[in-house]
Length: 288
Image (cartoon, rainbow, N blue to C red; front, side):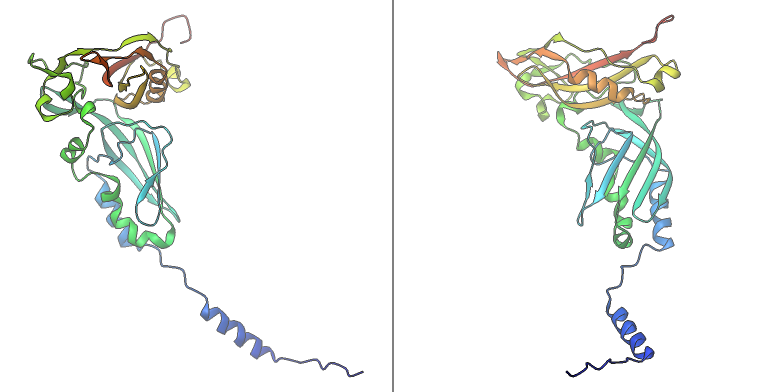
């Protein structure tokens, strides 16, 4: 029987083969330069910014899907508020933006910001290899160019009841329009009450205090704007006046469980926008 001959390969040949194979491997895309990161910071710091998706989450998440930033927010809550970014950090795969937001208010046609500043944290997941191309676009992808652009993008039913600094109220000029025209230009600045019968509350659930609010002995109101649909249930919740401390979410959870007799427009069940103040009050001698 013939014996197989053992083939001895010189060490330098093996090393050469490995080196050749390594040079054929695909290279990882380069990450962002320091200048790109600094440009991102300078574009975000010191400005009032308004989120394109109107997210009301205190900790909000987005991810780059290859063509756009997609929201990962499970709360479904919205708000229009000015964000002030105080800190920007770019790690291997995540851009972290930290700062505060203040609700946008309107009184007699004059816009202002609420006194309460709510801490927020925005997390944007961008693969390291895409950051050089995506980071210069983060501001335009996440935020409107201006406050005016944000206001123009608001749903009509919400812009009609944009809150004032103190209490919700419809326009005080006494002008009214037909309920069927709600959200149309001819109804702008008027109370859509002609032919309208408002929803009537049938049942509600009291909001839960958060431990954070309890420790701070907080008392006050969260403003919520919602739409009561033709079945009497609330949809499309907006935080109109925010207080933070987890109470915005608690107020929204409460309003989601409200049940109404549906409102009507000229006798037909119809979606009706509704502004609600959810009160949180600590009474002496007992836990809320």
